[in-house]
Image (tube, rainbow, N blue to C red; front, side, top):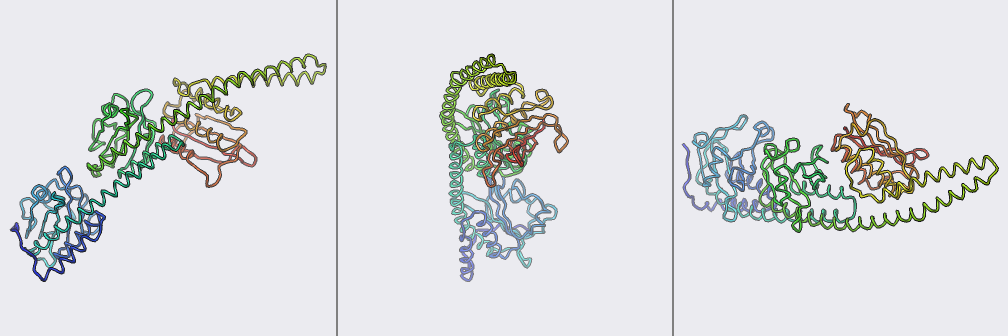
Amino acid sequence: MPVVSSPGGAPDSDDVPRLLEAMRAVGSGLELRSTLERICGTAAELADARYAAIGVAAEDGGGLAEFVYQGVDWETARLIGRLPDGHEGLLGALLRDPEPVRLAELTEDPRSCGFPAHHPRMRGFLGVPIHVQGEIFGNLYLAEKRGGEPFDDHDLDMVRVLAGEAGIAIGNARLYEAAKQRERWIDGSVAVTTALLSGGDADEALQVVAEQARRLSDSAAGLVLLPAAEGGLEIVAVASERPSKALGLVVPAENEVVGELLAGEAVFVEDAATDPRMLSDLSGGYGPTMLLPLQSGGRVLGTLVMARAEGARAFSETERNLATQFASQAALALMMAEVQRDRERLAVYEDRDRIARDLHDLVIQRLFATGMMLESAQRRSAVPEVRQGVGKAVDELDVTIQEIRTAIFALQQEPAEVTTGLRTRVLREINMAAVPLGFKPSHHFVGPVDLVVGELTAKNLIAALREALSNAFRHAGASRIDVTVDATVQLPDGRPGVRLTVTDDGVGIPEGGRRSGLKNLARRAESLGGDSWYGPGSGENGGGASVVWEAPY
């Protein structure tokens, strides 16, 4: 018959050394998980039990947040499957009524709901609540006393004393874990601020935000979303344990969650895979999710998303608070970086205006005057070869003047214009790159690029082209660059795709050099299901570099 113990007395004097040693062992570390495992082992040894476990109560009181056990080997645990959740059976009852319980036959208790398949047989049972700083933390469970006899009052008294010491040890471990957790989040905030204000690549800095958010929150994915030009939020950075095609996708403004986020409200989702507010093509396989607005000074700059795997534990209140503080710090750094980029952009605009004026007022006029002089010399020359050679030189000057006028037009345009065809956007990037390069890259289109390439792929291709041309200008020292956009390629998996190839005759990619730009290219391609790589260039003996970027339509 089940037996519920009455309040016990003090342990016998012969047991004091054993109990003191057990208490010393319990309090010998500060890591929370190892402390729980140590309590299990010590309690099992003290009561001579085969099995021991600690069920940690969830913050909302709805079941167990964690279950630490000892005595069941790995293979048996694998066969049993999922751990107890505390929603039913005796373990659930002890959470709702945390009082010491001693049972001679576990299966005869009316609160018991039996054992799952492959679970070892357990008869005797001992359950003692663990309190931490006056609040219930969970329960310590012991089962199956060695030798087969039931647990007695003496065992219960010993374990109750140990549970009191365990509460103190767990409290200390919790404080230590909380301090370490805060320190990690602070370090992550520093890394994000440094990345955003370093003046480097903006996409790379946002990727740091996503990666830090995922790591610090122990999530399966971290995402950064910024307001899209057409409304809604665009995914601009993804850090994920598995390949993701989310980069570049836009969550429409009509989405209920987007409205809340743009209004500055945080959204916490228990299960993203089943929540009707979440996009099904993005939330599959994810469970507990935090969506936090990146807001500073009353302005929402974007959204930070942290998603754990489906079935993972929910975010605690402490984790939510730390993540919210992290998002606020990231938003402040994002705003400061935006101000910094605005200043740099203004300086660039001023330089572009000056260069355009100089090209128009000085260079074109001098070239025009030179052409007039050559035409005059051509008319006066009586030698046909000279007249022909001078005529070709005048034609070349006319072409050069037209190219400079095209460059002047490109310098006077705003970078963000109404979306046009892919071919036009590629030519615009090439013309804009011609000014800092000092020459115009050649270009070649294969296939109906404007008809078959979708907007998402086109947008990422233009970003990849801009990155490749920027790298060629800053690092390659090239005198020739060739750009090819081929919309007739077949990807390795058989899908049709588009391939961008940028080849130069510069110094090539040095061993051990920075690879951030190449990583950005690869990340963009992989997010679409494509790939990116580099190889030898068009210089002598393969000098320079050739960067290839491809993705499905």
